[in-house]
Amino acid sequence: MKLALAALLMTGAAFADQSSWDRAEQRRERHEAMRDARQARAEAMRDRAEARRETRRAAAPERQRIAQEAREARAEAVRARMETRRETAREARIARAEAMREARAARFARKGVRYF
Image 1 (cartoon, rainbow, N blue to C red):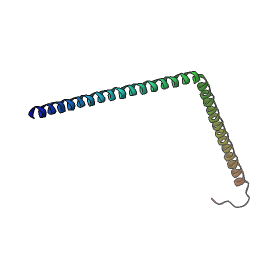
Image 2: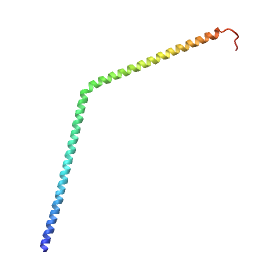
Image 3: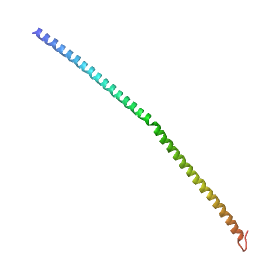
Image 4: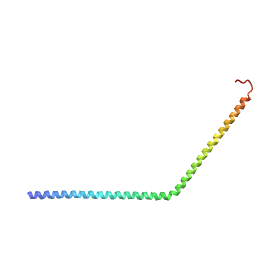
């Protein structure tokens, strides 16, 4: 009986030991699969990034031309605004000077008694 119990205990221990080995092996395989998936995902991301870079390089001259045209259009708009501002200021100066001349002429053209 003792021999049977000992054999049963040994086989139980052997089965338990084997199952822990199996679990460890499954863990290792799972880690390997995760690492492979991570590497594949990183490689796919690198490939996509490289494809985007190639596309940007191919489209770069066109984008640069469009950007240059936009800069020129903005510069032209700024020049036009400044010219309009200068013209408006010049017209306002002329109008003020004319108003002052008219006011002076009107002041001296009055008849009657002047008070000091």
